[in-house]
Length: 57
Image (cartoon, rainbow, N blue to C red; front, side, top):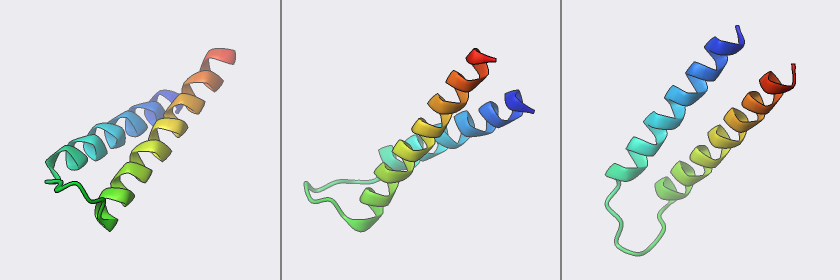
C-alpha cells in the first residue's frame, strides 16, 4: 500500500511540474501560477514525509 501511495504522489508531482513548466510567465505571478507552485510544494512535502516514514519502519 505504501509503495502505491508513493508512486501516486510521485506521478502527481511530475504532472504538476509539467503543468507549471507549460505556463507562460510575463514576470508577474498570476493566480494559476501561485496555485501551481503551492501544489508542487504540498505534493513534494507529502512525498518527502511518506519517504521518511517508510524508511523509519
